[in-house]
Length: 72
Image 1 (cartoon, one colour):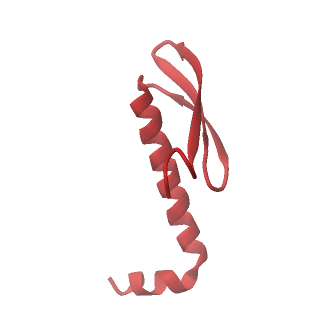
Image 2: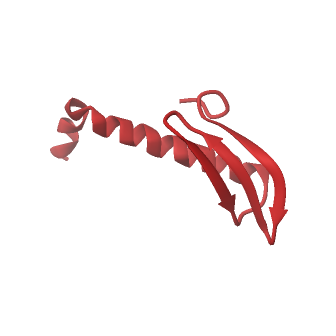
């Protein structure tokens, strides 16, 4: 998973009342985000978190990968 290549984001350049709006294009879906944290690094953090959740959810689809985790 590479943020900026496989999971990307586009800012809509609007900041309203201390919030920024942007769109994250993940592996599985598109997410329209209103984030109360300002700065491009926060957009990167959000895209990274979304991509991580998408990867974890995709692992759930493959039951054979989860069997070793059940023993922990």
